[in-house]
Image (cartoon, helix red, strand yellow):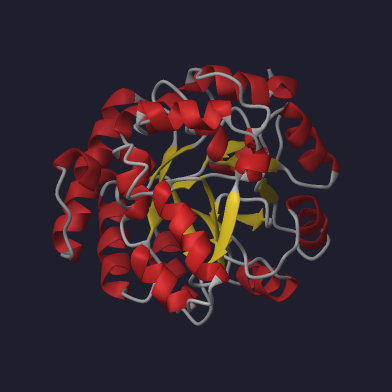
Length: 323
């Protein structure tokens, strides 16, 4: 089976692996693409290998370039890179330059209000780079505006996703048909999809692809710590905790830090105070496996995940209707 997303992104199966901050590297991303999906390097992928943090946009971009080149050596299939679109656009422009120079075929642009998207999209489109656009909070207005700017794929993320959740409490299987009905651009469903039943439901509601993160963490190729993978396998959605932070709420499996954040949230701490305690917590918790000082960002679709598998096994299971 082929559809618009497969054709636009030149992939075999309409599934994108979410670029989960510290949890992507060349080996993992290449495994996703080789299995027929679209692997995505996060903007921090290059920093995992170097083991040191940097605030320099130039160093950051060059580390990412190294990881892009390594990914190319491991797969001849399409893959993508995140273009940072946040308050510091110096990072965004440096990564755009790197993506263009390395001829990366697809980028993911995360959406936040007020950013100059027309300027961000222009050089990408001029170089025939496909744009997958994923706003933090999908809305009809945002979807229509993004479509006018020429995006190729729109990701509709529901409140079921892991980590930072959308500002509006609308579940994945409510937001997907709302966005599908608003635009002609193909839509991917994101948030809480852990097995083929979720994939089938997303397609029944009009999505033409699935954007998945949590399902790919407990895989043999993922760089997450082994104890974190086992925690995910052993957990269900009932174990997840939620607390206020910036910009709205955050979801995690219980850790010593998360239990503290939940408690001070109940005591009335501000979102800003809670956010300060979370700095670098994802890297510490999920990459290093330190569940005292970090957190385990995960979505509500983890219940059917019962074993650590290969990336190919995950994709084949989720996309079995396309096999």
